[in-house]
Image (cartoon, rainbow, N blue to C red):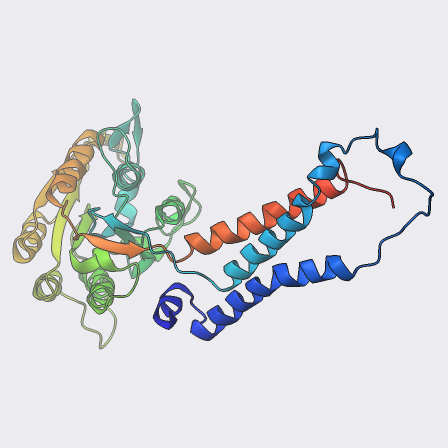
Length: 371
C-alpha cells in the first residue's frame, strides 16, 4: 500500500495516508452533524391534515446537495495530493537542430530576385523562403519538430535567435532582421557594418551554438532531444571580407569549417545571386553588376563538413534548394515514452470546482428553502 501511494502521489506516502483518512472521516462527520443539529419545530395537535400533501421530488432528493459537496471537497483534496497519471504515450516524431546563418551585408539589398511578379531584395526573398521552410508553406512541409535558430552576420556575427522549438518567436525575430542602416526594408543611413562579410566568424559562432545544444541533448536536458543531429544552412552573396582590427586575426572560414566537421555538424552552403537589371553610371553608361560569390570556398566548406553547395539565382531556385535540404535532413530521433503526470490532478481539480459551482447554483435555485 505504501509503495502504491508513493507511486501515485507526488508529496509522498504520508500525505497520501492523511488524505485518505480525511476523506473517510468526512461522511462520518456529516452524519454525526445531521443527527445532533437542532431543527426548528412547530407544535401542533395532529399531522392528519398534512398527510394529503405528498413530498415533492425536490424534497426527496435534497440529500444530493451535501453529497455533491463531499465529493467536491474530496476531489479537491485528491488534486492537492497531485496524483500521478499512469497513462503513457509514445512520440515517434522526427527532428534535428538547424542553425540558419544569414548574410546581412550591404550587397543583400540588391533587387535581383523576383517574388510575386516584382523585384525584391535578396534579403527579403531569402527571409520569405526561410520562413516558409520553417513554418511550412507551398512546396515546403515545415520543420515542426526541429530546433531552429538564426545567426546573422555582416561586420560582426550575432545570434539573432537561439535554437528553439518556438518557431513563432523565430519568425518575429526574422522579420526584424535587416541590413545595418536599414529599417523595414528602407535605408535610413549608410552604416559601416554593412561593408563587411565576416564569414569565418559566422561559422564559428553558429558552430558554438550547435555544440552547446548538442551537449545538452546528450546530457538529457528537456527540449534538447532533437539536437543530437545538427546542421547549418549558410547563405551568402559574397566572399569572406572581415574587418581589419589591429592585433586580431580574423577567423578563416575553411579552418572554422574543419572544427565544425570534427563536431559532427554538416554545413549546407548557398550562394545567392540573382540577375539584376543593368544600371547607369555617372556618365550615363549602362553596366551590369557582377556576382562576388566565392563559390570555391563555399563548395570546400560543404565538402569538409559532409554537406552540399547550392546556387540560388531566384526565389524559385531558393524554394527548390530548401526543399532538397528538407528531404535530406529528415530523420527519426527515436521512440520516446512520456508519462502524463498532471492529467489526473487536472481532472480532479476541474471535477471539484464543477461540483461546487453546481451545488451552489442548485442550493440557491430549485433546492432553496426558507428558512
